[in-house]
Image 1 (tube, rainbow, N blue to C red):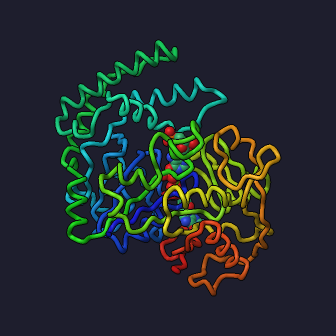
Image 2 (image 1 turned 90 degrees about the horizontal axis):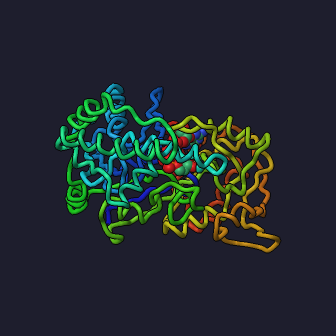
Image 3 (image 1 turned 90 degrees about the vertical axis):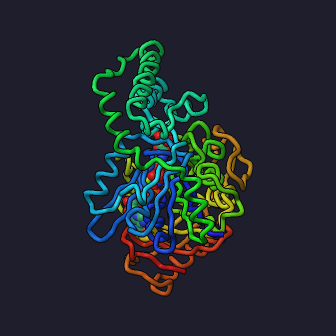
Length: 425
Ligand code: GDP
Ligand code: IMO
Ligand code: MG
């Protein structure tokens, strides 16, 4: 069973890109299954930094075939920019190894404008989206009014579809939101050119993936976002519009559960969240600031400062269950050096009553108070550790607690953004 699914076990930005890059050594194909350029995955290779939004991180490894699956929403302009950026960094992004499903959905200029308009209209109740048009694109998909990536095979027809979509969005922008319409001048040329560029990449990725699997080759599904941002299993409406959990890999790429061998959850040693919504263990104090500074916790996609807080063990256990995790990877353990003592939330209280599981709804998640276990911290810089024995006892104890809480073993501990800054277990 050659499929491994890599999932964010928190609110996104757990270091999935960096871990996908590591696992790419043992994989033949890598796929993105859901979401779009709301994702920002960072991979450091020596002095070079790659920031990927749509293309799987495996692209940096020359022998990995890369797939963008049907569950994704793709902004063609951004994808062309990303391919150009990768090519300029010396990466082979030819259609021989990069494949886009013809069944994914296209993000139009209207989707981006409507994402911003809706967020502005929500004011203090806003979701804090990345404003990349993700929600409106999935709205059109569900309404069966979207544009498929396969339409780019006919660049002139595609440009016409984009103009019609912009026209529809302009009605909403002006009539519903009282905003200026999008100026369509130049859009047809811009989208026709993007379609001409991307048409050779459009493929039947489902067939290609099954051909790869039937040949006994291995596929890694690089999840985007995180479990607590899942539209069904996160705290709605403070979620994204897709399924970043393990099930989303199956529907987004088109294979069955029996193909899956491993489900790896990536969890930071603490928690972060970008955007609004419940975050019970959030720290709005000097410790949270220290995590943000030491962990460079600023969004890869939007540059926004990430909210930081203690590890939420209840959320981690929930992620292990919802995804059927077989193992975890712990990232950014190095960031906790110098914070003493450390805390992990192991349960909550809700209106004075104990609660051992994730609060069932968003309002109760806002009221839930974490119950913390206190764990001794350590002072040493651990970014040079390559074996468990190199770590202080307190750090090993912290790792043990994370594994016990998740209920599955850790396969790797990351102690820095560089490729070799890891302890393999
Ligand atoms: P993703 O969206 O899950 O791929 O994560 P991002 O790339 O958005 O954010 C993770 C950030 O942490 C990136 O800047 C990585 O280079 C960095 N990073 C990943 N693992 C580690 C680690 O173990 N230690 C430190 N200090 N940084 C890490
Ligand atoms: P990666 O793959 C962190 C968050 C946004 C917002 C909510 C909805 O890098 O982990 P959207 O634009 O999707 O409609 O925004 O989801 N969000 C992410 N947060 N990492 C991400 O991706 C995210 N993608 C979306 O901040 O709260
Ligand atoms: Mg990210």
